[in-house]
Length: 236
Image (cartoon, rainbow, N blue to C red; front, side):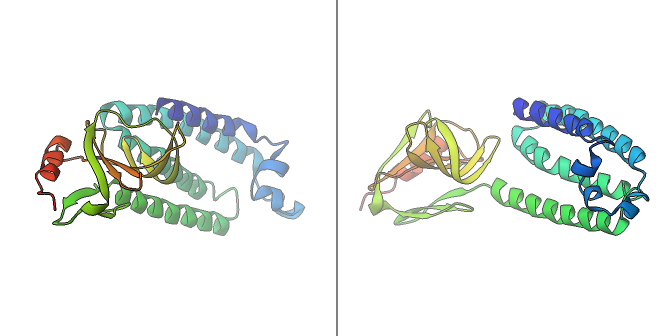
């Protein structure tokens, strides 16, 4: 997580120095499509100065706040911060830079970013909600996003394991901090399903008759207790 914070912080600061008065006609979005007459109404020098100060502040504050959130709150919250904070910052930047550019275009850009921010927050709230393991008479059900119902007759084995396979990439799922849900590829090129609401060990490993594996970790309830409940169900 710290590498991400450092890398993005340096990127934001670098952006502030990339655009200059000399290359603005090529690199500065909005300005590079203006006519020569429209460019005369833009205080380019003041805008470049503001853009640079904004990105320096964004880069520094992004790293400082992100680090504090990581160490004093939770890595999962940091994942939300990494996405949401820059969007909020750019909404502010667009709104406050309206005096340099076309105000209508700036308001539209801020509106689009606000819609994107709301969408992202909704998605995060949905995926951060715990996916529960529910025991039914004839099946195990995972309730929530990336959930499914697994009939007992399709299960080869259920066991507790202290480690999950080494994950190299996400193929279809959600990953933020300690939360991982969906399908992932391992270092042995095996495709597994993870429903990890938290990094609580040992994990519950369900292996189906077709060889497909599901690693599960609850957030609120002990995985050992869940495992005992599963094993206490009489075989049919």
